[in-house]
Image 1 (spheres, rainbow, N blue to C red):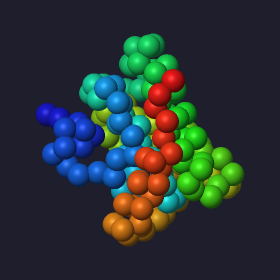
Image 2: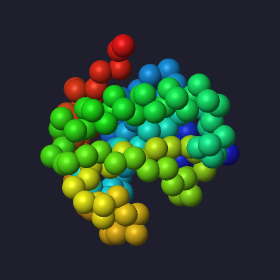
Image 3: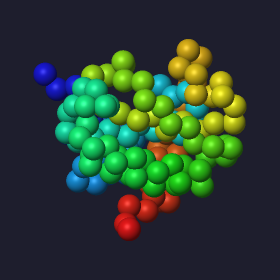
Image 4: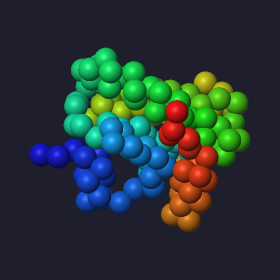
Length: 134
């Protein structure tokens, strides 16, 4: 059975996409730790992040860097934090989270509420800044 992320990738479930290519998709987390929290997922459904082959893992980090650079241009924050948790959805993924303090990337903190209009604005702004070309 397809994971939630595979359903998003296939367009069965809508998302606020910020970037994609032939191998990865980046979209806003709908239960974010902070506004602008992005998930990066491979199109190929693999449960555990460290089961990704080395080339895919390396490409995912580079793809994530390009998204993070765009995020930093759009979201006011000190850094973009990276987390691999992988217990919520059985599909490898990276969390990119705008941070001003270490607490901003704590998954035990309450999630923020973001309106659909704001999600749309943030996704469009990040997508506009993403450079996926070499």
